[in-house]
Image (tube, rainbow, N blue to C red; front, top):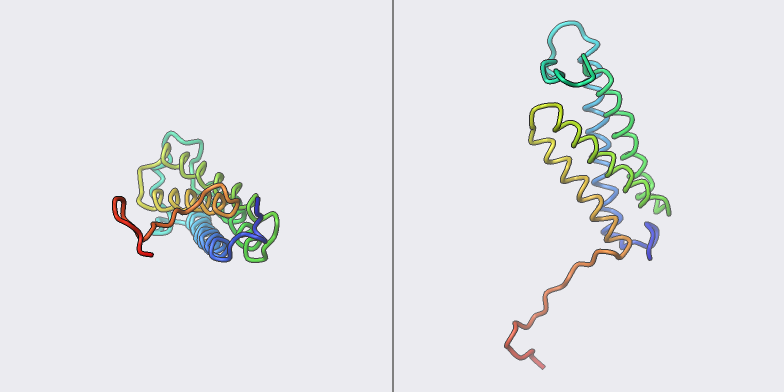
Length: 154
């Protein structure tokens, strides 16, 4: 079983890049929600509050903080640990990816669908796939040069 320090470099780099991209956009999105909520009047940074009907929130302040601190913070940690080849990188990436999946599942249950939800769900699944690759639990099959029923060149 490998760890991030012995994971193939392309897998480790891909994991750091995906986690880093999610971290940056989650922190930016969370900050935009917080700033937009605290600013008086309508804002292009914040979705309509009618989307929150039926949720436990009456503003985007708490969701913005959770997005920035929990989702963004866990992904930033995973990205840094992967880049530093830490033995804890795969654990951090797994926790961050499952956290992102929970975030997206809750979001899709409470607010209207957005393409970004599908993009971030795909990012979380990609992170989990990269963790499985790094652990050697998922392998990539290489296609052989010969086709079935045809002899291989000697």
